Image (cartoon, rainbow, N blue to C red; front, side, top):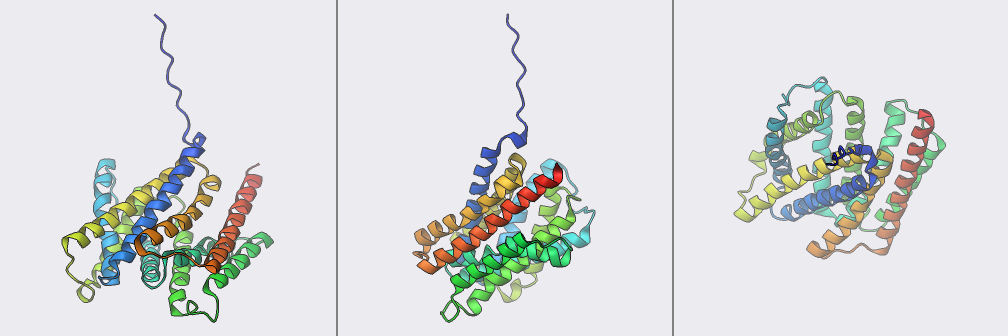
Length: 300
């Protein structure tokens, strides 16, 4: 009898293709969540939709916490967790407001400014070095947003400020996440975000509530659970592939947004939106490439 060879375990980091595929699936799921919010916001108050996103996300997360046997409320940095969760609530509200006011492609084209704002704010708030490559990426990204917004057009107004506010608040959220520096388990951080979001938005429900019918309630539940799946897929993507490989695939979200916007709402981006989005994405990819190269040189 020939002895069977022991199975060789492939390290997670040696599966970059799976990580990149999961990142594409993750942003697809998050786009479906946002599109569902846009659909619900036509008939229901915006804060109610935001509350549903967090409440059903929390309900879906609780069984995972029970299985992991984690005391999810115990954080080594509760102040940072509160700040991170608050920034996320603002980002969610401004994103859903953007989607209510604008087509999905235009919203994402402007919101993609967020990674560039992270680089800028990291230099201003965390005293990280702002070199020429970062300044070039940030400046180019802002020019791309101006192409999308087209000063003098109908889009350049209050409606366009919502995705700009979203990009800024999400950049702050990412900076605080960096400051947490892995002090808490991922599930603990997810619990704080969902719990704080649910509690904060629940206080506003008495003034922002319309009893949902069965179909709307099902969509609200699906929105929260799809958002949770998207988050988990993204976390897994970063365990399977290095951030320098997985992160650029976040920009495939613009493709998902165009598809969902067209199939559900009949929206298609115009020429200048496509051009502006391409400029913002190019600036972001340049920044990712620069940061990845800088990280590799620092670790040698």
